[in-house]
Image 1 (cartoon, helix red, strand yellow):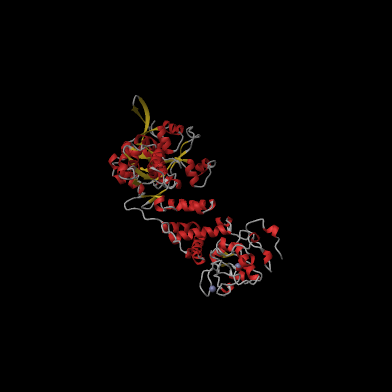
Image 2 (cartoon, protein in one colour):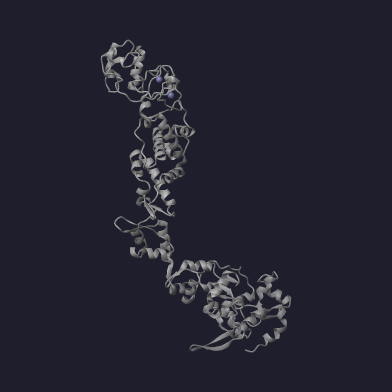
Length: 577
Ligand SMILES: [Zn+2]
Ligand SMILES: [Zn+2]
């Protein structure tokens, strides 16, 4: 088929511009994607010219092969009938996608790297057919990386990149892998060779497929050693020119992905001996920022950090200023500590632990504190570490378990505070929790007997008096029930002067006696599987001794003598008012 000269003159790409095709006998048409110079090779071949340079003599026009320049070809493509030299062979990555192989650039026999001057349409100028040169097949990684977007099932981020971009990215990473950040490839012809590109792209493809962890491994390999004695390395010192190279050579998407991985690398390494500082990373904050977050002056920062047990990474800048880097996580932790560190007095009202006891606990390391302040979370931790028994309803418990604040006040001398809390943590003192969420000491009950036994404190129970409302709380009875029992003499109370007024009190010994001898009818009934409604009939039927109740003395609740206490019934019922 003849070329239409009018059409072919439209673009510089077209051979017609340089060639007077009418001087040639055979004038094949140019194929889509065919290289300009490759077309000249084909034209010369079709017209029986031994060298394409003879086109000059035949057509009287410019020498088509005057320019040197290396050629690349796919031996498998050139094996086919009516084959052409594709433009993509010399412009893109030296890979033939159709045959999944690398392009060739060297004659297999004379071992020359072929140029447009030495190449012929189908052979080297030494006569060796170009189709006979061995083309290495693509590695498994590259085949995977080169799967076209349409058929690519991969959810990998690079799947959206055009195939040529994926190879360029692999080449970029492979070059970093091979040369690092300081070394630059020498400007030798070998650098342009297919073999060289193959090495780069193969090692880079593994990194692309290995994603973040492979890129992190690459960063570890190419990182510059920090100068001696510093604990903060700037990003541009650790990875000189890396960001510029990424910006220049990669697309926006590729650049973004790699920057994210640089950031995660810095975050991962933030705890190491030497931190890499990069403002944009978010992995560290500067001293000024840190001070602002914590609301302290920059000069005080090192002291504050060390108070909370953080060793900041510091470094002198060239101007002699102190540079300090802290991970954002650390800033938040310190912020948290500061917000929870309150004065002993405040913590004392919060938990019911006196300031002097708090001081002793800080000293013993059971809670954390600085100066006159206490870290409230450490107090909560301490109370949280106590082991609590399940709640029982035995009458001895009612007397034995008393609120922790009261126990401390009455039974634990200040110097024994630490011993007492160690015993509690060791589970040597029985404890119960009144409210599930309560953390004030009055919400926690601890065993009086255990405490006395442990601390060797003298028995004080007998001498103690409690108010009637306190006794009601202790026995879990309504106050009016206690008042009624006192009125009826079932429990004895005494008049005592407190401050300017008289009030009735019950001695602990009396309360203890009452608990040992008497119990609410419903307790006994429920022990025998009898319902609250049937309790009274059950008591009468089984001959229980009822000491108080609506039908006995007009009380609101029935009480009976415990069965082993029947012989004391007379004493109780005849008790004086
Ligand atoms: Zn091919
Ligand atoms: Zn050759």
